Length: 237
Ligand SMILES: [Ca+2]
Ligand SMILES: [Ca+2]
Image (cartoon, rainbow, N blue to C red; front, side, top):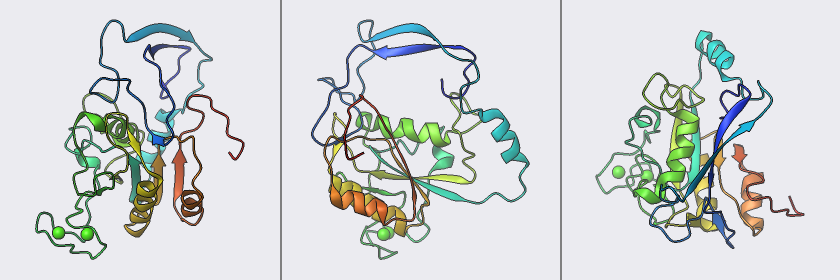
């Protein structure tokens, strides 16, 4: 609904509400096996919401300008989240590949401390598996919003994934999409060292980590973070 607002949109509301946890989280499931509630007649409510037409990100003119541009620069966007389905047909062309790493040889070829990190790293489980199935739906969703292929089937991301590549860094996991500040800090440092210039953090926390705050402050990357999910007020923000 953010791409084009023509005055009304259908809002799908989850009946099963989010809850707060004492750690970083993406979204919370109250007992099912998926990180979003299972589809079913009792799980969703649908209603039409009226809005002011044109209040959207106005993406079509931006695409036109971008497509006309002669010199497009390559940009790496690190997504620190749950994992990402890197083989999804909408995302295959969008996934960053580590140019200094040889896949599957059991050797840390680029010497960054991570073995076979060919498409990012899993800081939740400390391995190179950046997609573990249904628990990684949230990160896959975020990647799609940023860089799903245009002109393919299904949705379109806001960027041209011929130039904008996604670096999958899994720091949240399990059925509740929870992770530690330490995992996020390590992922931020990884992203910076491997050339990301934008870092997406679609997550929230009810706690404060001075080390995480300083890591972000000392980074040269642009951080895009979620804000206001759940409406909790924190005075330090
Ligand atoms: Ca490596
Ligand atoms: Ca290797």
